[in-house]
Length: 284
Length: 334
Image (cartoon, rainbow over all chains, first blue to last red):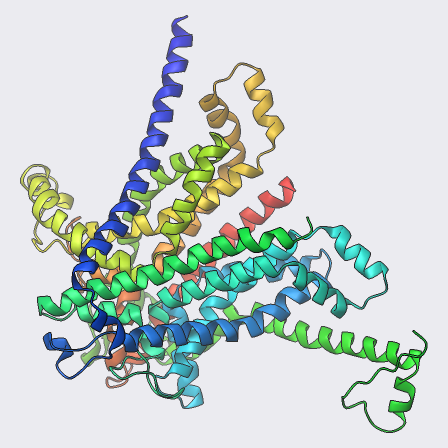
């Protein structure tokens, strides 16, 4: 009887520990979101969203962060498109052209490992590539480095999506006499909801990544003008504004962080929604 | 189908071949050709992508070679003198800083992560459905936002509360807890921010591993009269132990390379930290802070690329190890 009680007590205690640890983490998340929102709302204004920095912006005068918002969106858009260009052939090759083999597992391992490489290393690598190609810090350089960061995310997520397609669909399609390339079109069409989710996730990651664009995209107070000019980005805007001595400018960092966080959360919500909404049209 | 004409515009559209293309046989050949062309080009892309990590390593190695070939490796790795202008590059303080911040973050995050993951995976679908999105959300927040939060809340909290309190009690007798750096920016702040950032990664990997444990094992253990926790402790965790270790290793390597958030709160002073509150200077922060002047001082760029190479090597080793363990676990499960 005593033993029984002790066991039940242990169960209860551990359950409370688990609840507690999860609760602490959720509370921390809530705290981050709420505190950044609260701090950011104070400094956020219509002007912040619709203007590029004017003269004296870093002294607390007129201007906004439109340059960083458009810059971040352009960087993420370019990077997502570029990495799609590489990721789609990879996943098609894995699913339509190779069966279950050692080689496929090696490719997956390589992608997983690439996913784990810190973005600062991609930044350093991208910087070296740019030196080789004779590029300076520019939108193009940032797009290339960011595309490498997004590539494994995109490829692995799409790979997981395609894995969920029932094998019968593949077999039926092939039995009708299609080539593997035609099979690939069928598979991709079947996986559209998952692919949209993957693209949105990668896009969100691209907006928030700072270390890879630090050397490669540079920073500027101008609006993005050309592929070969430096471009501003939201994470770096937060970083630089926070490092200025004036409290008015630091306030702007809070507002920029709020904009950044909202953008990223919107894209992650959209990713979740797209899975739900589009997922209805998929054969399971 | 016999009457259908197939019009394709391509290099095969030369007279002669075009004639045969309109036949059924010609069309079959054309489809086959497209298939083969796609296969070869996609195989090329896949191979290139798979080798990307090696290419990155090779490129960084060439760029870092001037410094690696001119100084003994032991001096570079363990010397604690960092004086770029005089050409002295000892990575000691940076490696120590990186290791200490990362270890601290793991110590803080791992216990929470293990318990949270068990709760998510073992205690019912409803809990998972509620909290998994929250964890995913935590993972999607950009690192600069974590950094800003650290600057706004963690640093002042350490400066005004934790530091003062521990410094005046335990800090007097234990040197590792001495409060000599009253700014708040330091190891502890970096560790806390980093712990929150790696938490979601560790949780999702552990959770995934726990779910690969066959349902039958749970049922067998519960049928023998074990409580839920006993089942978890003696059956599931034992079975999933390699996966849990892999998750921790993955979290470690992610934390090791995290740049901006850590850099914003860790103080960035070139020294080997002796206390929990001392400022540190991790490797990624070294690269990120100094890329601007790296072209103006000889060997400086080689040193920074060497730092990137070091990061890459550490992360690659840890990642490959962890992924191999995970691959074997999931293979057995499926």
